[in-house]
Length: 84
Image (tube, rainbow, N blue to C red; front, side, top):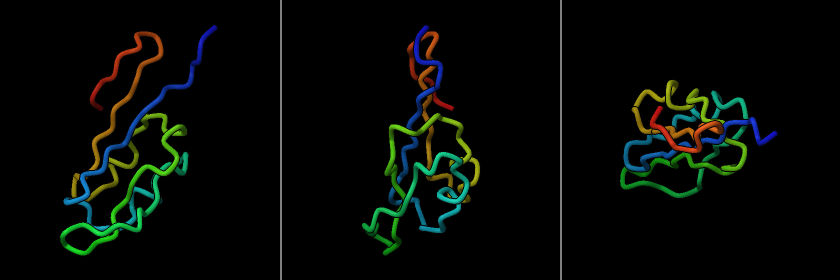
């Protein structure tokens, strides 16, 4: 039996991120954190700190008021990534 836990990736568009932290609070796997890097507007942006823990639930993307996060999920049964 293979790995049944889905794998995902939350890609943050740094220039759209305003550093509100809602995505960090929404993540049940504690994948996201502030990067310590600033975008052109001066905001501390979010990034995936624990990429291996991401399950692709997209709670982060749904909570982002600036639509700055795209989540990709790899489906274990097919092994292909899909845009959530």
